[in-house]
Length: 120
Image (cartoon, rainbow, N blue to C red; front, top):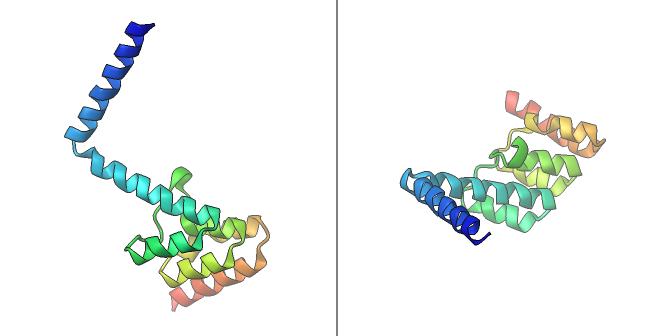
């Protein structure tokens, strides 16, 4: 059992060394940051979402499962977050189906209005 533990540890260290040597550490940091931003929107944490956006986070990044912050906000019917993300340039078309599925008519109206404003 102890030998197996050493092999696993060596494998993990070797994989981490490869990851770092090929410059993938930066890619991993972005993915972690993007997921934290999307998760904050999913949790309804408007303070964290605003802080990420104020520090240059693009509003349309995708987290786990390809969902954006606007998609999660529309899914849960969080109108304040939806409004904030739309003001910061999030694409309203990406979240319309989530709002429709969950019957959040106020969010649907916001997204449709924002989408029509983008066309003109």
